[in-house]
Length: 359
Image (cartoon, rainbow, N blue to C red; front, side, top):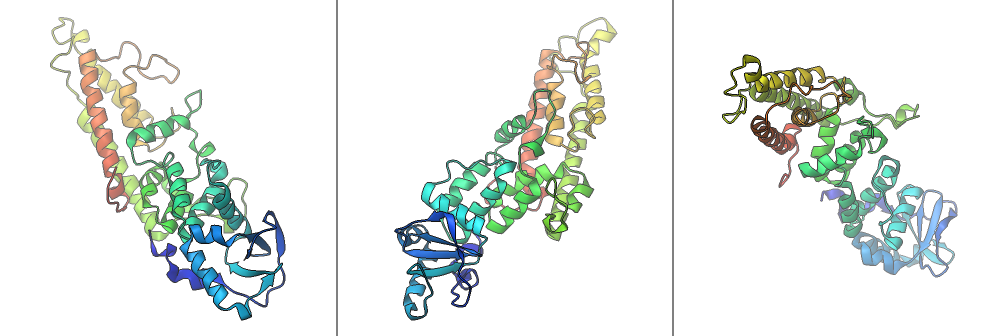
């Protein structure tokens, strides 16, 4: 965990103030038997010292320092006041998690503000069990394992086969910035890859929430992260090009191809023709014409394999006349699986991310 979570930041994040005007009692978090008042912005929360001290050594030290200066301590409703430099709604979320846990937290785009607040404050105040629970939930959307990524992608695909990640998941720029702030580096590879599927101009411009018009709401990457995102995007694009050249263009039939000894020249070349048609389809959809997935090498490589077995014709893919025989298809499937695993393994390095292990 980075230094943001250590006690050396206590002076800048926790302070006493004896001159501020009286804040308003928070409507949701005020206990009649509370014995410490936390102030955030214009609100105060009457809560329990024991709970805070049990879960956060940083808050425990701040409360101890408060007690040591009791002659100068400000009181609200007879209790000592600890003023925190937090937004009231974020502190409320954090305290609710301390009291009630995080089992009800969702990790979709609608709940991201809540998730973000919990991860930031649990990191800042060293509450490991909340941090770990939040990261565990986020890892289902921003996973380290390729198979988990595939489940994630399936959940963002509607019944018509159209991929709509932004209607399900938070924007990756938000996740990248949060992960950098909280030291959650394990979220970065999949978030950067997700972002790399946007156009270069979209990556550089940043993310403005739907309905947002205030430029202050615009979320952008740091200069370093922007360069890493664009470089990684180039690496992924080159990987797909190399796969097409090495595994599709001019691909020979398997040694066990059922058509190898066919006297009919047309039938003898069915499998080669299939891979040529697959090449055309992959290149045709490189800009998202069919599946609305521009610049998505992981999907494009997988789709090259799925074309061999998909029975529908709704997307104008390969006809039944362009299907490789089973031996040829199985060899190509093995090449596809190996390529996708290889690509997944390389993603952190492509985007300039250092991790102890991946995946």
